[in-house]
Image (cartoon, rainbow over the protein chains, first blue to last red):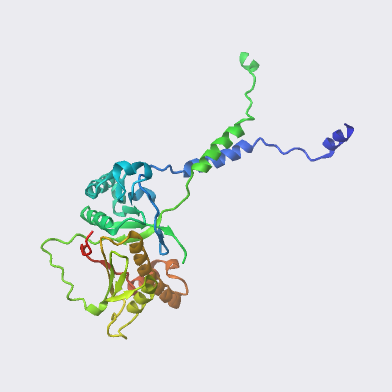
Length: 155
Length: 180
């Protein structure tokens, strides 16, 4: 017993953990602020193609997303196996895109309207027919800036 | 005086609670950035407007066709996707040497046309290769002039290079050739 006592007396004092909660809170706030919760649930299979000449999108809030792909397994019985368009949280037709773009434009501040961009997140198995329809609708809606979402790859 | 008799709340478990929340946010956070190929769509042609492309000489247009079987037909010749980048570069960087290719990069236009049955994957590959051709030419010019790559250039220097090699990828009005 005396050995333990001796050690305690001569060793370095224990590090104070009183500031640990502060440090943890700091980290917590950082992650709370940076976290963006996914606002839509994907109803379509969405494996993006790979490309090397990609650009980053600076401001995600200016993006309106159009998802294209075959319905996910649970939805196949109801919506079939052919690739379809998903806007927000439901399956839509190409003719609904103009309205969708207009709604996004309405919700954006005036000075940021020219920077609005439409992100096409299409599955690799989608056919260009559907994509062409989307592009035609976007042209009609005068949303000319588009971005084909791809994964970045190195050659 | 009764306040003094209240026992102090133990804050020792605060760190644990904070850790719990921290771990939750750590797990749910997605730091992914959206990347993609940025393109600009042309305006819808007016009904009465007649598209006049006769002023553009045929040799300044690089025709890239993709069919429903994902095969490439470039300038009326079958081509593999791996050759497209070099092909586009030779076309753009011709400066009138070869009479069948472009006069200069400013006049050169790449015309891309795809079928409704073309797969999206192939389309992106083609777009990517064409972008890569432009990027490589711009990089080369930027290296020669300023000693850095195109993407690292700023302001007027960047504009100068972009003016030299403007990215002109035109997509034809959609046609339905190959059927469904």
